[in-house]
Length: 614
Image 1 (cartoon, rainbow, N blue to C red):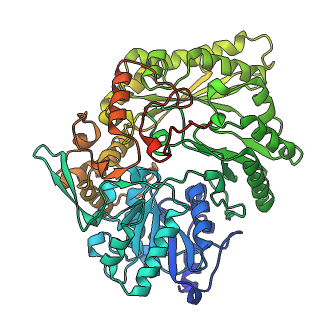
Image 2 (cartoon, rainbow, N blue to C red):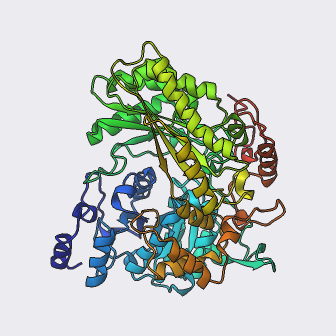
Image 3 (cartoon, one colour):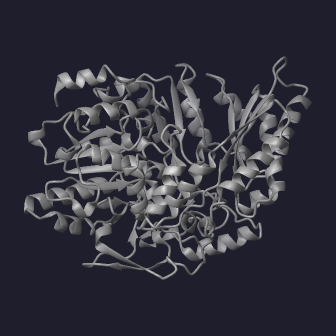
């Protein structure tokens, strides 16, 4: 890299700390002493990427192998992107400042669908061919992992291989195969064929797809002995997995500016809208003692004054009380704030509220998801209005004056009555606050309702449903806005147009890659940001591809249809999803996994019922 040119560019952009590297915890190796160079690529800004726990874990697990040097790259923001393009500066890794095209493997994480165009932009900026079919022997292998790989097909034309499932050991296993292939002198295709033999690896070039006349997928045809379907990798003993207690410390403030400990993986609840709750099954947890030791090391190695417990539902940890007590035994004295972002409202208690407020007071967030009990039963949320009001009452009596509630709009079977009930529930919380004789005196209440547009996702019981549609969601947003009168209640919305494109990319097949390519060539980047998203651009990209946006996003799907994501197996049986869908249509509740096994199929990874030995 031309250092003089680099310094000139940094002087012309905002937040140059995004692009310089050198953070505490960075790992440097001698390029002449390693056998494989891997770049972990996060397709969003530095602030977002450095808030992602996956980058911390995989950076350290890969670098634990002396043969591998893992570096990092992030999507440059608009100003830096323009400077780099104008000056011909290729995208580089933060540690070595070498161009990404010089690496053996570029590993992208697919955390959310609207980052897909950023993956194309990062490849383009590195002078790596966008289409996997056009890459030669000297080009890097492009790999993707993360939750969106449960439907890899929209990105299949651009990716050489996908990592499915838990990556702590999978990534290193694949790198070991690639090193051995390099030593044997195997070509690119032979190397990918060897990688496809690793449990949890999907190589899309080894599969052909045929389609029916109605546009639906007919069948996947595996080639050269490739497995069908490809099963995801599952690590059952998360307590023993490597965890970085000397993490990278960002050189600037990031979105989640605090270290996190992952307390558990998976979820027992079975909320029918929640993709993460299904694709991260089975439910696994770390011991309280392990977590306390990791948390202590994290804080003392980084100097932060806040710690977050990371999970889908922290309150379901079987050793929650000893875990909290163990953490508070030192966090109070050292004035370290404890953040529990994934607590269920029905698990909230005055004792817990008092404990987590001992260092710093903050607002509380509860996920109500729907305004009526009927609709909460449809989505199998497993909480009642009584639970919600009781949790809020205990919070108010403990000194809290602000509550944030998460809701969804556009859920299956939703009516206008359900929409208005969101406002009614918020008003009930306001009224509850002022009815309490022991509420905090002289302080008013604040109730915030964040209402997202429901997007049906693969591997959930609602994968058969369609997106509600932009016009219908706009109508319902207007209805709710007019129904809420109190100034104590604030409403915020998610954009219905971005939801339509997210649904397209979540449920699309391999042909959707044409749409992605068109959108990128027309300027689509940072689609998850207001500064970057253009619905008109995406509509044009769909038209130019000769495809139908609503066919992918809004169409109801039959049980018999072959879905694009059936080429991979995340362990959830389609028969289970059908049963849960039918129960949802009848507003029937399914008990959580600890109470009764629902036969989802994930116990194929355990060899027994998930909680048989509890």
